Amino acid sequence: MGYLLTGEGSSAWQILVDDNSFGEFAVPGGSIYVQQDEKFTGSSPQWWYEKFWREDAQNRRRSRALKAAVGFVAGFVLALRFGLPYAALYGLLAAGLVAAVDWFIDWRAFWATAVWRGRRRGEVITGRLLRRSLGKHGYQVLDGRAIRDQASIDHLVIGPGGVWVVDNESWSPDTEIATYGGRLFFGEKYGTKVAKPLVGAAEAFAELLTRETGVKVTIAPLLAVHCGMLPRGGSLTVEGITLLKPRLVARRIRQTATPQFDDAQIELLARTAARELQRV
Image 1 (spheres, rainbow, N blue to C red):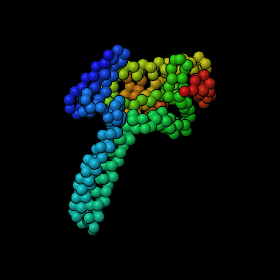
Image 2 (cartoon, one colour):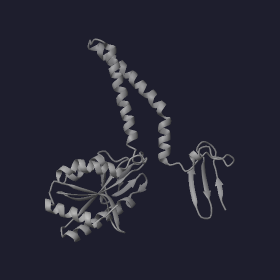
Image 3 (cartoon, helix red, strand yellow):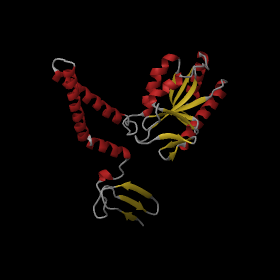
Image 4 (cartoon, helix red, strand yellow):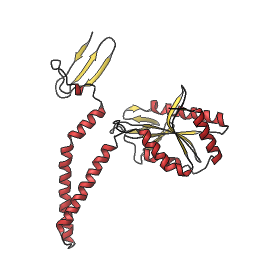
């Protein structure tokens, strides 16, 4: 037996309940008498984000034109003030510069959500950054490693300063990532379910490498956040993990000033990890 509940207006909600399932999804202008358009059925936050972005293009162009006009006036007035020839040319240059900067800011804000929207793969981005920044400093990066039936991670980094596991995650652009009372929060939700598995994976990997190589290993877990609002500075350490922007991961690893392993130990650990850890 099923029940269909609808509301009036442009943000009506449909809730379908039967003996075996419960679902909820937003349906603009929902009605029990009008068949719903399939493009609204099951639409995700990412789908809505792209839809609103496209629909807002005209408003962004108008805003950019207004800013460019202000830039033209400012450039023209400054040219007159300093007695420069061809004041109108300086106005045009200022307008073009303002428009270009405004376009870049808008593009960068949208591109920053690419991983969250499923347009790019976070592990590919982070892996490339790690190799580019760490490879020349004696670090080795292994991607997609797992201990069967126990733990898996996106990247294992082994180098002079120690060993790290790095995972990749992404949240909606308006999700505030913060710590309160020593606990991790994503918006209003606790983040323990994210932190605890990564800490457990680091401990499991450290135990395996220590056992197989005889080299005492401790592993620091890092989480590369591709979309979401981190505190000022782009990093946060709480509940045993460090969350940070992907571009900061390699820098954080290199900040370990005290060498822990020599070249032979690094090679031993890397070969052991490649042999013992399952490739994902």
